[in-house]
Amino acid sequence: MYIPSTQQIMAAGLAITGLVPTSDSVSKGSVMDYAVEKCLDTDGNIRCTKPFLVEKDACYSISWSTDGALSHTTVEVRDAGSAEMVYYRDTNGDWTPEKNELVYLDFKPKVWKTGNDTVNYEVKEC
Image (cartoon, helix red, strand yellow):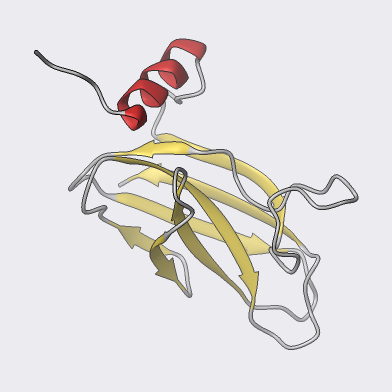
């Protein structure tokens, strides 16, 4: 008997509700960088992306820009269930996941005394 995992059940639920994109853009939007270590801060600012599905051995192109005048932002791809970091990038580029999973993005400022900048991001299939 086949029993689906929690992640598979969540993925199916997302697909049914229409949260899984059907174009080559897997995830796109704007969030504030992660200067505050919470996805939703006390002021209601969103600091990490909505979760999205990635497939093992598929290619994803991750790009972002920061509105800050003097900033350098990196991205951390995190597992949506455990918040464990599964990938890190310092610049725009491609990523090939090692397994099927539900992930989200965190953007971290890397310039001292910066942060709280808006990050425009897009994840596309290669």
